[in-house]
Length: 196
Length: 313
Image (cartoon, rainbow over all chains, first blue to last red; front, side, top):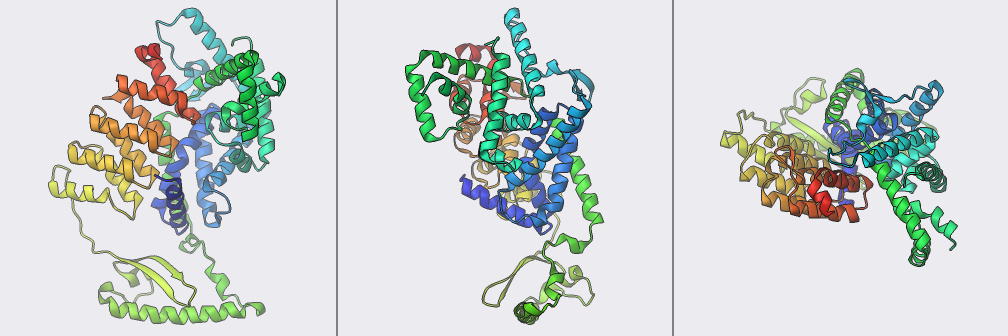
């Protein structure tokens, strides 16, 4: 399954969606929506906010798609929209200082630590405690990063995007994205130094 | 390269973001410096620890988002005038400006040709049932213009689908219905039809269904169809032929999301985590060599959940 085939296929889907083919648009959404939702969910720690980002991002894509002229990859264009929405939301939160130790879910507020992967019952309790502390520390560091550093770290470390694509999505140079990632990884290393 | 220089580049080294010369220099330094080898090991540890806290999206949230979006888009489409649906600004063609005479000439020729070609089309396709009303849809009857493009030599190319519709209704137990669905799953023109057909087949068993799904997983050019077929193969995850095909997807498919789904199918049977020795070996290999961070993490999570496999690892 060549990458070239996939690109051609995506191009024809985009063209069909631009002509108003709703099924083609849905296919296009489904090619990316899991990653978009995953990114928003992990950045914002809230199902409600992730849901809003998802809706807003794809609604913007729907409205702006007729103007899309293939000047960049579709994924870059989409991630630019998602990144801007996420950045706005993170900045709003920083202003409101509303980050708290619990996470909104459909079944109410749940302690953030419950999302840490379950440990097995037979694991050494001391090791488990250490693992929980490491996870708490990681969350603290992630929350202490600037919105842009947080986003770049998310896109590189969790989404596996290349720095060049991240730069394009954020409207900055690859070098600027690299600097952001450097600062984020330095903070992470410094914060976890005691544990590893 | 000094130890300081090497250590500032370790994260980028792990991310594969160094250029060739930098990577060579770091590797050369690491080969000679035990201190930096330890630093690399620490770097890997925090990378893995950071990945382990990553949360996957609840499946119901994704399904709800898709449903909400579908409703929103329907409302948008209904509110939008049909004219806006076209990305091409037809009005701009008719706006006469002094320096656009050549466009007007071309437009005139195009419209004359369109009328001519349309007339020819009517003569050749009497069964199109062109009516006399003003509505384009009623003019076309059962036909649908899939594409229309002027070509460089003054001609226009119109691609018309003329559909002879009939309805076939029944369950998959009806062999005739099943035959149609198995044919639809290979529809070369519409990935949407293929996805819907795969979804329908997902509720059915049998070797013919399995073979059709395997064929889509391995050969469909559309990633969404491949993913849907892979999910549908969950029912057949005990079957050796299916498992071999899934391993092949893991090795060859270019889409990380698809490979991640393949990992989940490979590690399950009847909805439970079941890791055969062969599957564990495949996951261990992926955990070491896969370039996609999420996929590596997913393999590690599954291996971690399976105590015996993790012990071997």
